[in-house]
Length: 138
Image (cartoon, rainbow, N blue to C red):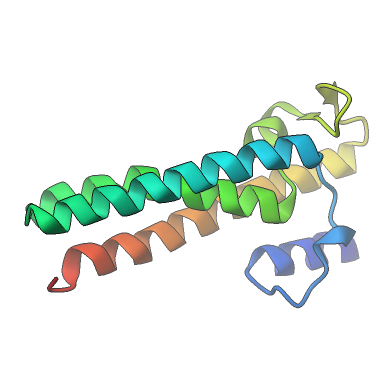
């Protein structure tokens, strides 16, 4: 129970907690892939946002920026939590030696909780960013 509380508290942006105490399902190679994907999506999002502002597009079209922003934020949270949401959903892990099942049911359950929190926080952060981008008078 303490493991679950500590991991969920960390998942809720309490960065003073040590995420090393949480179970993980991705190793350094998988995290590197997500760092690259997250940076690419963030750069794409910034470029698209700049183009939208320069072209003075409608706020309704600016909402489409939510998709690349969400993927950038999702990748960032997966790297921070060392948890792939897809791997958690299918009960797998890749710590560097290939895809393997998560053997411990408690760890599998915790990884699924962490994945849900990653989805929730990615969506909330994206909503704040997009609302600011759409509603603020640029």
